[in-house]
Structure formats: structure tokens, C-alpha cells
Image (cartoon, rainbow, N blue to C red; front, side, top):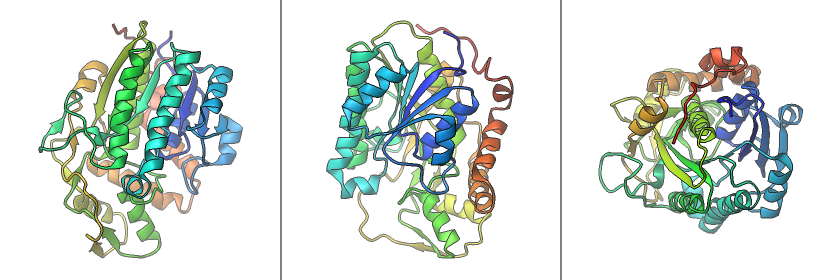
Length: 358
């Protein structure tokens, strides 16, 4: 199989969310035939909209909890690879709705993997979990073989997804899980996330309100993450045997860890927000320090984050400010083409180096 995504049939679950829309648009520009599977339309002011999807990809508006629909789509579309992003992705929401969080994230994953097992067990599958799957009892950069263990319903559900992926690989599937840090970039409008919260405050001319200003996170630029996902998928293309499983961390290429407060002060350089408030009421337990070690993916797939913390913040702020006045999709396409210039210009004939994996 050729080592590129051009003309590949790529099924993306959860393709209308923040990461999903960027992955969808990137793969479309790469020449892939994208099949989207999501229960909701993209949010207003996302990087793509429903009209674009109707004209450029095959989109199914179905729930991940619906195994009958999943099986029907996989049988009909015959994907060459699957990226599984569908999830309830918010920590605070998981405290409010733990049952539905577990059902969507765990049973939804079981539904997908069971559908693949029954219909096309040879199809490579990339499952997106979280940096929050680790049992964070000490201050360290976590490696893939460190102990797993969630604190909140969301992270616990993602730990379960990791074990489900491993279990189904033992039944003949080819699976890699990707554990990325806190991803920042344009087009994220989720509630209770720092960048969207800041941007909503900015557009409403309100002070910024921070819940956990001292907490550090592995902030990652969205296209660095997308490149990592694609390289992981590329590895799976080149694995002949079934019963394959591994995991990769994706983290910033920086020795310094940045706090929520430092991120906020950095983005203030590009936004006219002068006041920062702090709200410590009704806080649930969260990890104060969270950093990942991504040496494994660097050594095996030659991936590392190219975008510095400050450039990532600048690009993110510019996306929101510019797209409040201009065509957001054109700007996003330009951002993607700037990141992958040669790969898109050459129609992705040589998107990745030829590699064979055991």
C-alpha cells in the first residue's frame, strides 16, 4: 500500500468537533475521500460548515452509540483507515453527566471496534484518547508505559478506552491510541476550555475568568497534533500483521511547562482584554501538573511538535480575530497549506517517507 492518503477512503468519527474538523479539512486537502460520522453539525464559526461538508465529503449524521448505523456505514463505505474521535470530551461536563460520558466514550468505542471486528478486521484504526489517562500522583513527564488511572469520569472513560483498544487488538485488530496534550488552535468553541472561554470573554468585552491559573498543561498547536495523527495512521498502513497495538504520546517540544495563567498573559498580547478574574468556587479535583514524554513517537515516527508555545498562541489568537471578519475556511485552508506546503502542492504523492514496520 502506498504511503500517502491521496484517494484513500478515510472514516472519521466525531469529525464535526474541534479536532475532527481540522483533520477533515486537512485530509480533504491531501486528496483523501473523507467519510464523516457524527451526531451533530459543526458549531457556528467552526473551521468548516454543513454546506461545505455536503459539497466536499460524505457525511453521516449518526450517533456513535448506534451500532446498527456504524455497521451499515462501514459495510457501505469500506474505509481504508479509521480515525476515532467521537466522544464526550469535556471534564466538567463529565461530572454533570457521568453516565452519558461513560456510555458515549466506552460503549461508543466498543460499538466501533465490534463493527470493525465483524466486518473489516484488517482496517487500521487510530483511536484518540487523552493526556489525562495517566495516574498523576507525582510531578513527571509521563511515558506510554506509565500507570493509567483517571480522576474524573472523562479521564476514567478514556482509560477504559485504552484497555478496550488493547483487548480488541488481541482479537485481531490493528490499533494505535494517541494521547495528545491540551490542543489549541482556531475553531474551538467548546465550553469550559481555556481558549474558547477567553475568546468568548474577548468578543463580549468581559474580563477573563480563570478557574485553575497555576495548573500546567502540555499545550500543543492543532496542526502539530494532526500531523502526529497522520503519521500514526501511516504506520498502521505499513503493518501487515493483525493483533497489533501500541500507544503514542504527543507533547510540546519544550523543556518549559506553561501554566494556565501564563497562557492567558501570552494571549493578552494579541487581544484587548485588560482584566483577569479568578474563580475557585465549586472546583472539582483536577491534575495540577500534567506533562507528557513524547520521545517514543519522535524516535519511531520522526514526529515532534514544530510550533513553539508563543507561535501557537499567536496563530490561535489571529484565527479568532481574523475570522470574526473574514472567510474562516479560506484562512484555515491557508494555515494548513502553510504547514504542509510541499505535501499539498505535490498532491501528497510523497506525504511521508517510505517505511516498513514489523
